Image (cartoon, rainbow, N blue to C red; front, side, top):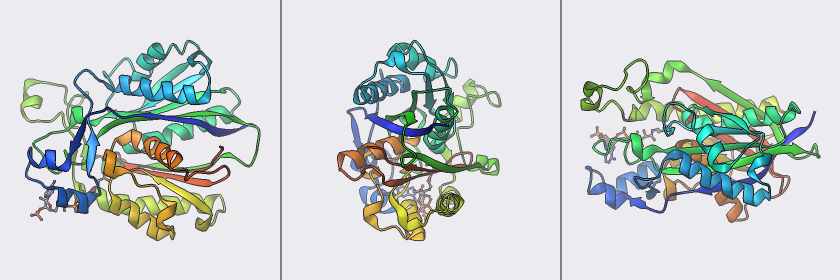
Length: 329
Ligand code: UT7
């Protein structure tokens, strides 16, 4: 069975920036509170004409360019998002069409902040089954479209962006996918969700008036779960594959809160230089945080061939996932 490797990375963030000071003119907050409680300084916000598929296509094109392959060679597109252009058709279909990926099938994967980790887990298995040679995994979210800019507890946290990995078979057993530990716990569904717009509460004048089409979060509950689960699941994954935490060269975590990341790194005994943090620039871009952070790690020359990389995320659902990959280039 072939193993799967990450052969190219790309990303896109919209040009407009919303700073903490900008937010302090919209809701009762300030730069100091946001920076100390979350680590976020600014986030990028999509203009009114830009939807999730537009950002996804830009990240996809950059990834294909890096890999030096035409879109027609793709076998599958997995689009991880909670902010699709529409509920159906899937945003994967819209992206496939815009890319001209004539040989690809694909689907949207809804797992909120763990979406990208689940997406690369699925892609690794499609490739190692020997049935797919080129799978594009995209994480893209336009969170600003589902944020209530009168609610200071949520609107300060999120930003918009997209990123992608190309997953291909590897010739070497010393690189690529090592393994995963993913889980869901639906008892946490009530703590982070968008209540209306689905079959339970379809859109109505009432749901709009009640502001039910926005992100609702019980911050402290989600925070406690994230701190515990991110380290627990990382330890589970490392143990499952017999890997000592000291072998982890880079942890690329979901970027929700610098305190969650710091607590996870501390529990795993990872020094700061082995952890990527870039939420100061982008905020929480949901499914896009991990490819955006991987892009930054590459730009900073912090990833080398053979490095053991730990991707970790926790999000709405609850969902949680950890992937271990040996870097390829
Ligand atoms: O990515 C998906 C998963 N999501 C997460 O991982 C997010 C997890 N949660 C968190 O990151 C944190 O819980 C938050 C950053 C959302 C909130 O931080 P916190 O330290 O848990 O604050 P809190 O909710 O306990 O609120 C503390 C105080 C409250 O005031 P009182 O009741 O103590 O007077 C809040 O009303 O801070 C107040 N507060 C704010 N003050 C200024 C809440 N939001 C703000 C704000 N600006 N934006």
